[in-house]
Image (cartoon, rainbow, N blue to C red):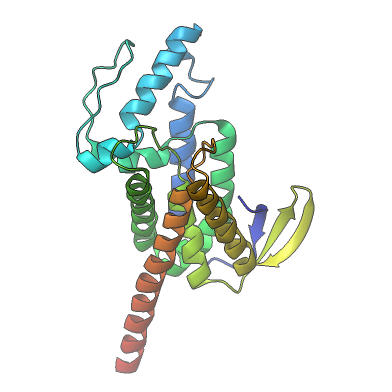
Length: 254
């Protein structure tokens, strides 16, 4: 992601319970998964561990071919537990809470911790939760459409949903300033819209680059980031403007 945000100067009016809950769930899911070395109950033997990871990912991650067809793909592995039953549509939700590594998790949670409270405060807790989940699901399905009905590489991570939060931030509180580590070491106080816009431009550039050079090897779903961000902007405009207009009408009545 573009820079490392440390703090936002927007004074939230109440504790961002939903944001903290989302962070806790993401961290908890990772620590309990076979992808975490803390989950010792999956075994220490390399082959058993690899099997556990393979089955776990295929069961809970979003696979484009499954999302577009509505049918579960057969797991080619001979691992124990590979005979699970999966609902492909549900995986668009569960995949948002999976992360491939501790670094993957940390980078996502830092952005959610900095930008989530402001968006939650502006939209309201329930609207924000729905906004977050819908942004992630839209990003997931748009990514699947871009990959095609034959794609079987699984998608994991909260990046699509968190990109939606950044898109929403651009709508509801772009005037805030964010202390950001540029190049990972230099603290700079930047307008929030500059950091968020830079993030989107970078993700879009990388997405287009992969489109032009499809042979490039990457494990990052830049398309999901782009679509999640766009969904966040649209969702933010709809929710925030509708809420603002409703508030204005109530003020007029009183």
